[in-house]
Length: 402
Ligand code: ADP
Ligand code: MG
Image 1 (cartoon, rainbow, N blue to C red):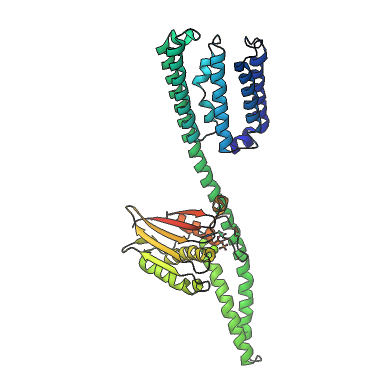
Image 2 (image 1 turned 120 degrees about the vertical axis):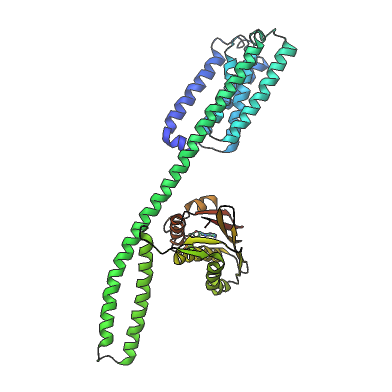
């Protein structure tokens, strides 16, 4: 509904609501046969008009499930009340048929079914009352062609269901498409940005390295100084290696050697590597890998993916908590789960994952998961985060079976 407001804009919403309120008020005060009597029914009519108007006006500010349910209940009560209060106005029956249409606007399947069932029960009670108690005295327009009226009601509910089903299927499809595009766009932009930065850093590094190599050959420097030069050159080489590695990532088209990776060995080697990292805060890594789990990918990239995820899990864990890595073979895919019982994330935080430079850590880069998403996508896998704040996180990776 949020998008509904921003796109169709609030002004239009309020204009339509105002029109509705004017129509309801007109019904109350102009040509109303009960106006003179001021009986309980009429007072209830006034109360419901006021209540419904207030709910609709306040709705954009309080877009909660509770206010949606209240709107549906109050609107149902209002339409049934005017049906019973004004039997001479035959057309009020039409409103009863279309009450579930209100919930279609909320695009929430649960609310729609709730409204549909509620309306079914209410109309059954209404018809029973008219048939057995009223016996067509006050509501002859219903009893005169009872079967026809029941059929019309049932037909209208089927039409509403069809409208809801088709529109919600379409909206869901559009939504997932939109999310996918947004995510890919984000990856592309950062990939390019990071590649540009990495490229610019590599050039000065090469120049400095060249000079240091020259100085190392100079006879005028003492061996001690020369040893420092060698150290500097080694460090620069490491930096250059990291950047080159990153640049090859940023170029998704570049062909990489594909390996058939045995998860038993690959996951073991990653957890061995991170063993001492986990020990810093007494976090053990439990590994549980089924036999014969294979994934086709570039080994270095695959290890980088798992390393990033396990490292995040360790960093999120409290002192002494274990991190569990599980790999299983399913029917047509291989599933890897990385489970921690650490800080967890809120729903909004999970949605931001993979966004470049999104990090809640003081020394984080926020690039780890971005690279993970790229690797997973490259090998036709999926990555999914299930997280509860303060309880922990489970990352589920799925790769097509080899
Ligand atoms: P970095 O680790 O450098 O911060 P990442 O891209 O690896 O960057 O992670 C981004 C953010 O996602 C982290 O800062 C952290 O807030 C959150 N995050 C990732 N994994 C977990 C996890 N297992 N539990 C809790 N938060 C996590
Ligand atoms: Mg990380």
